[in-house]
Structures are given as C-alpha cells and as structure tokens.
Length: 241
Image (cartoon, rainbow, N blue to C red):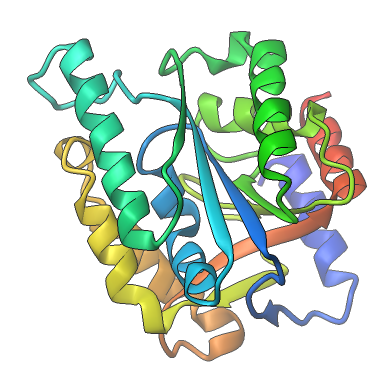
C-alpha cells in the first residue's frame, strides 16, 4: 500500500469507524473530469441523484480523450466523437452542458498552471458548493494532475468529494444511488468510443461492491473521501508535494 494511502486509512480509522451515507447538500455542484466518461464513472449516480433533487450539476472535462486505445478512428475523429458522447451522457444524468477544455489527452502533468487557471475560471463562473474530482492517488497521471491543479485553485469554502476511477480509496462517505442505477448505466452507454477500449460495465460492478460499506451489500453506491479545502490541499501536498 502506498504510504499516502496507508496514512489516509489510519486517519479514517482513528475516528469512530463509521462511513456516512448520503448526498451532499448543494444547490450547485461541479464534476472535474480528466477525460470524457470520467464524469459518469466517478460520480454519475451521485450526479443523477443530485439533479433529481434540483441541484444544478456542472461538468468540466479537461481533455477530449483523443488518445483512446482500441479505436480505428483518427485522433481528430475520436475527439469529435467523445465530445458528442460526453454531452449526451450529461443530458442523461440531468447535468448541464459540459465545459470542454480541450487539453491534450495524456499531457496534463505538464499543464498544471494552465489547468489551474482554467479551473479558476469555471469555479468563479459556476460557484459550486461541492466539487467532485478523482482522488490524489488515482491510477492515471491525468487524474492525479487534475487533482493537483484543483488543489492550486480558489476552492475556499467548497467541499471536495474525491472519488475513484482506476484505484480504490478508503472512503468516509458513500452515496446510495440505487434508485438511479439505470440512469448511470444509460449514461455510460453513451460513451461508445471509450467502450472500444474497456468494458465500462466493470465500473458498475465496482459500485455494487461499494454497497457493502454502509449499505450491507444492498443496492449500488459510489465511494468518496470528503474533505474541506484545507484538508484536501494537505492530502494532495503530502502525496505529491
């Protein structure tokens, strides 16, 4: 286990051991997705549940996912397809039209300052109470880069919900989205290009497993580490400097 993950697990276990189950309280929420499909994998069920309660859910996508493996299309055609697909997925989830930054897929590690500037613009325009982002040790360099750039942004007063895509975390919060499981599955189904690279339904299996924490294995859930801005910055700094 990486040292940062081990310390996170110890910190959570030092509390009462309970995992809180429930949605965030927010009128406006933002999902920061490194690539098209990450918005749905990371927090699609939570987004659908929030939207149904009247929360305005926004999505910002850092790249167009043009480096998708398994597709026979050119990078330009992949970019066009994935832009259409993420917009369609957002409509299924009940989210607003996504903001597409168009940074190079696989190149976010070298764009920390510029990506932070972009995120500051989006945060200032949307003013969310809650921000969802892949957690700081998630297993893709673009995901970790987005997390670091968000930590550099103006996030004071916002609650940061760190979720998992490629790498499991030790959660302190679970969202039961059983009533919206079909919505998340339909949104994933819009990502046809990503499905050429991997079987996206595997993420739904992960969410079934996540129901073991706090839901006794009943239904389906998404898992998060929820932190205030100071706590989030501290964890990112400890992991990445």
